Image (cartoon, one colour):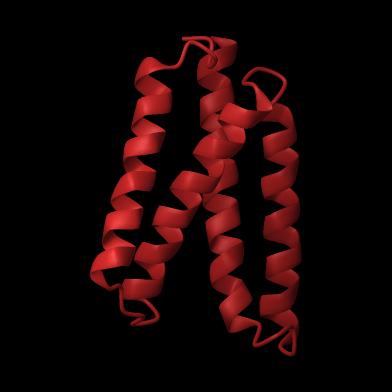
Amino acid sequence: MNSLIYAYILLGLAIVSEVTGSTFLVKSQGFTKLWPSLAVVVLFSIAFYLLSQVIKVIPLGIAYAIWAGVGIVLTAIIGFFIFKQSLDAAAMIGIGLIIAGVVVINLFSTSTGH
């Protein structure tokens, strides 16, 4: 498999792990609940390990921008649907700009090795 494609698969898994860990962070209630707290530690460890593998192929700034951007959007979506947290117009515009930034990086940046 192409190393760039493999790196993007790992990046996707890192994002899913980080977002899931963030979801358990809410459930841990300030690290007062054992099992959700352990899930946070394990999932964030997995996320950072995977990110460390990704940056062997994709430059750190690009990988982290995608990881953070997609993670923010997914976390906001989970907050909205699962935790019933509201998003005002400014939040929606900001999320749209984050999505636009990730799209621009992936479509137009030559730094990613496309």
